[in-house]
Length: 104
Image (cartoon, rainbow, N blue to C red; front, side, top):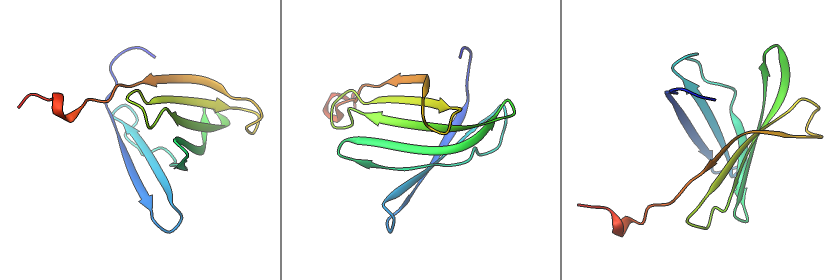
């Protein structure tokens, strides 16, 4: 994907189920997508949703790894076969900023 994207993520935690619901919206469509539902366990986060893209029902998976390091890794994948196979279509590698390094 190229170009400028403006969006927001709403993240809600349910302390009873220990699961998160992650909602995404962007300025182009202006609606909240179906929530990704999942949790963090053993340094990994997995979140799943079902959506319709170009008229096709797909499963969407968000996977967070390297959560306990200074370089968290995020992947978004789609599955058109009920989760048997996944196609990664977005990757984001991040770098944590040490609070002591921030300028005052």
